[in-house]
Image 1: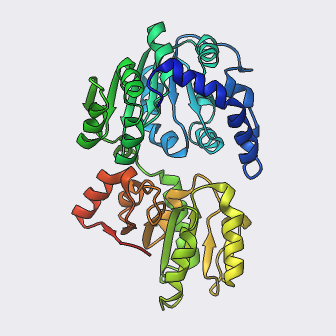
Image 2: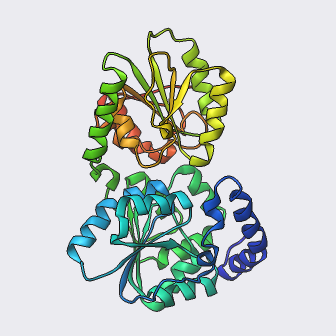
Image 3: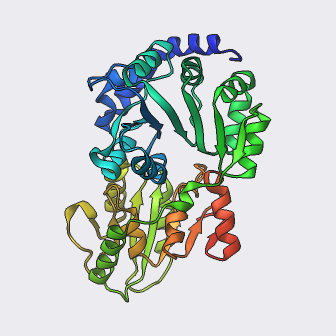
Length: 372
């Protein structure tokens, strides 16, 4: 069992060849994993900075959730550069789409002491904000040693994640207490952080409730709906994960709703073609969003193979199912659908958005289904 930071660091070095091999392997389907690999080892080609604000958002959800923070920082501290780090290519792409050239983007290095030292030497942040649940012991320790205030913000810790960190309780407790503070989403999140030994926890709420859907995308979705036909029922399966599309299609095959258009938006772009092949095998007439064509009257499924348009899909639908909840992935963000007053269906697995789902169910806007 890994209980100390030196033991953890040794394990990281032993795993490095396998980590790099995994990057190459994932790059077969998502080429972005094979780009900018040097950044993952703390080597950057951009000009050095100093006194910047650093925000870490691991992937797409965290990148979009950070928007209220980023916008406020840009208004209040226009003289300070903002650097946003990611771990996934989709997160990096989302950062480019949402923030453009107003901030810098790069990958956060893996948690090797030398790589983190090079990262901090290059960007010299005066403040760090880590979104949600990214606890990297060496990164946190290096910031503490340099006097860099580092906060875990919009922090959440599901029961599943808690059990994982509890296996390395000593290491987790040391890292959490070297953070300047933890701003937890809910009382239950705060309780789990404290159970791991954190003493610097406050409950500040979920900033995803502060995000307003992009008005341009909402208008775009409403225009789509006009094109598809306002009397045509539209069912959206949003952010679906591996295996969920087949389960949903099995159910929808048994539902006799004249003219029903099913919109499927897979969570990960590397699965777009996989889902298209599934639709081909099922013999379902479908059109891909990327084709630029609108669904015809005989079209059964619109495959949403685009990034950054989820608000438009929500605006265009009648009912939204939240993916990642039929299988044990913990669900994805349902707040945007609720913000657009769409009835929401969610499966049994919702540990990533437990509080939001429970609030939605209490308000009558969310229905939980036991299975497909």
